[in-house]
Image (cartoon, rainbow, N blue to C red):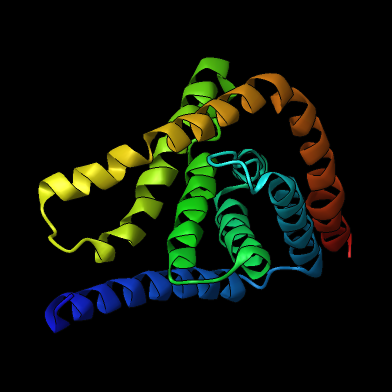
Length: 209
């Protein structure tokens, strides 16, 4: 890799990091309550605990289901932050590297998009397709981390990298779709109850005071 290409990659990664930090700064400036932070910590822990036992199975990313549900129920900000922190914490267990940044942004955008489209995702068919497609979107975003290792960077080589991950992306997408089809109702009730307890009830108490 020549210095120009290396410099471009460094700038690209720094921009991603800057974007993530900027989002966290916006969240910090919104003065989140302790209850919100505790809730995010719990959601991240659930995502991590769901992923680590199956980490040896390529493409099986159970955390994606939790992140999507988080975005739908708790909103885009919580979905994004949960996705980013999930990737970071999993990296602490399985190994951190520059690829972790791409995992952070992939899961972060997954949670963010679930929050943005939460009303449309009430439809079961749209929700299942959304989860399935994110198996591929996640793979494509994280595949970018492999491009610096290509000796000759051209369209054929790039497509080859993306094509090589299709089996794993398919497993990821099917896992998302199946979990959203079978357990959406259950987790919606659980997460909604948690939302009422940690967020809505606290807001009511604050308004009374």
